[in-house]
Image 1 (cartoon, rainbow, N blue to C red):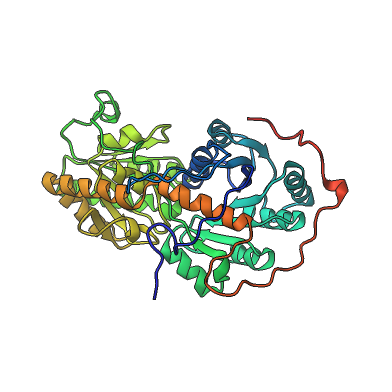
Image 2 (cartoon, rainbow, N blue to C red):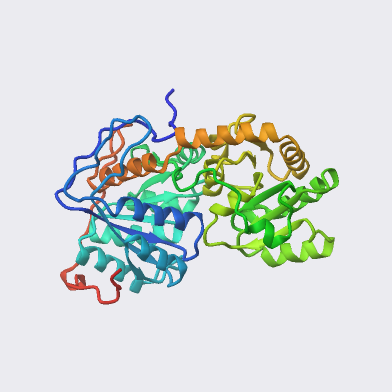
Length: 432
């Protein structure tokens, strides 16, 4: 039996280039700057600035594939804010539309009208609320729609839209792919496009002379482990706290930092104060540029209950950090147990602490695993390759080219927009 590879589900012929850029409407169901939003930002920046007159140039070097050309992007999000500004800076036109779980007709009409008026070729959604809005509007406008499932499981709302609107499901890890098949997803409208990391942007580097350690009063020789991610229940930062407390008993000089924002921040701060852990467990908050943080750390830790293919782990590994992570979702596809780090069971804070202690007290093991982690990211998870794969998938979906796993399901009747819904201009949308 064939299995999905580290890059794409199966080798498929590249779709021929368009005579003009493919116009992709990215419908994003959240406005924070988290992992999913950063994936959209990288997609826009990576594929939206190519030469529209020719297809991706393939270079001879075996370790690199140039980014496909011929895309332009419009991004819709539920509110203005940091993500909207970052999407504009990446080169997209940005608009705002309400995206509740049950989209109102005003939102559906706006998106459907935008698709028709702006010559959108493909609608690409992120999160279930965006998938529902995109599925209805794209169906009305008669254009294809796909959604990227950023979590480790396909949930019922996404499956319902997939079945009713015929949307293409793109997942980011093998567990998600087989989970979707088990739920009855149409195999010809399902594919695997894993996340990637920019190994040129995230790479090993010297420890900053005046960085995080100096700010927190942590000595340059003190062992330092870090958690980088959203402070929310699925990331289980409270497990990280309990593991850090056990670690401190075994290694009194060790420190732990948690970098990120989220709904559990106040709860975590109160716990640290109540237990008297403030001298060695530090809540840093969000940072604009996390690269110097990785250069400060000796070890990166993920305590998540649920993950698909987390960017923070990939960025840390590309930066030369070994990792200790929970064995969930697509994490075992990133972390090679015993080679690039260690995998532990979710919520097992004692094992988490034990592996942290092992890594922080064995510098040679840490060095060897960090080098192996960097090499794995370079070999299997380069962003340029992943963007090339996703770009080709979007071309294929835009042209109605299903995966070659079996007969294509008969498409349902598609009703086009009435002429009175089509507007020559979109005055609500700000130019980038």
